[in-house]
Length: 140
Image (cartoon, rainbow, N blue to C red; front, top):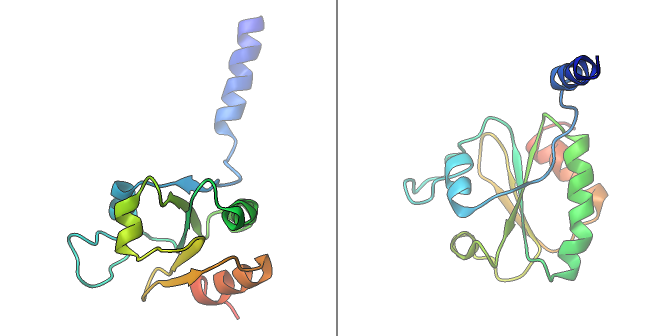
């Protein structure tokens, strides 16, 4: 009886839709596969089918630590519409070098079509929402 209940519970959990997306930690190789292969292409060609955001950070950066919960919250708000990534500039030095990351945080906003936008510094949540709505999702 107990094993049947556990089986039923697992079946119910497995059939539930996933309601939220978390921020995904991304490596240089994953960036090249999922976002833009800068070694194969000279012109920007986005590999994804949804807009994305890449938060360039380090673990010791104070403003990065303040940005992290904002990005977590927004990843839930924009679940299914925008993919949120984090790239540790100390671990992913090649990626940081390619984008000229010399100060952090820096955030790369990548629309499905068109060129991305890289912004330096910590922006208020309201400004990030406006960028997502207007630049990535093209909502007014």
